[in-house]
Length: 136
Length: 136
DNA sequence: TAATCTTTGCAATCGAGTTGCAGTAAATCC
DNA sequence: GGATTTACTGCAACTCGATTGCAAAGATTA
Image (cartoon, rainbow over all chains, first blue to last red; front, side):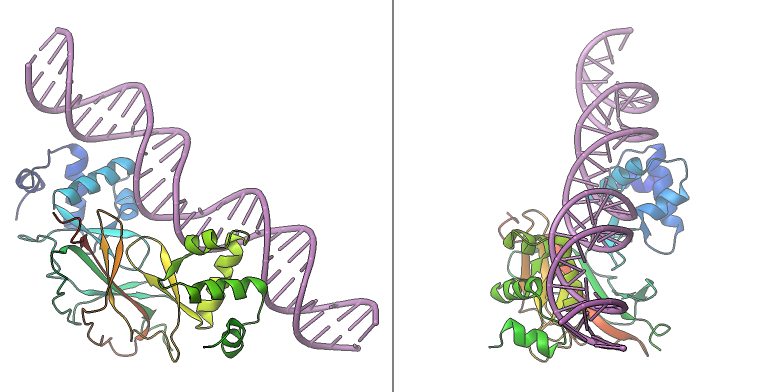
């Protein structure tokens, strides 16, 4: 397991206090985190600093962003070797009744064959509807 | 071809001046329209009235909404027999450089097998990256 | 050390979406 | 038909996530 400092060094992001704690938080969470999630978790760190940190991280492929239908962009640390290609990509199911987001790991996503010379950076597959609990 | 009035009658939406012009505009456009698009096209109609009209239309399955990666919800008239099931569904490709959205009609989307008792209402498949013109 | 560049924190702003409210129009009831 | 209720509209204001301007603090380079 790499330390935050090692990851930042590899990804060529200068290490600072804010960056370390943001990255540490992201690494410690199982689920992708929104800006608000991070802000709440890091009580004494300014929102805009976190925001700019996330932008920097994204730019340098430390993390990638995810649209899961909730309306808030979520962020997760890139797995080793991740070029943010949709590899461990999965559908997100957003329940329009209870506002919960489900990761549908079992539903396969086929390889997306883009037109000639298009470059893939990110993919978001969001399905909305009612979850089993709300569909009664 | 049905008139706006006929469509509204079939979908059980009371006909009003605002609703007629909003529906007429949507029918006249090739591309799905955002609230702002409609607002700009209908200079003397209030934004919130258009907004509420769109909500009403969506509720009564006159139109469906689409997230295409642009950050603005787009709306399009349902095709005949459309239950807003992802049937004529296609990927959207959003170019992060020039901000254009492309409809990828040629890329197939497989049937999405949801978990037991989940109900599908809508699906949005958004791919982001660089279009051929910006990928140079 | 001085000059320069980067990062940070605060406050302010943006923009899409949404809501409260009062006035008007349409539908319903007696 | 007139009164009452319900629905629709326009305006202004507000929400909330995202983003930016700016000055102070910190790090880097000359």
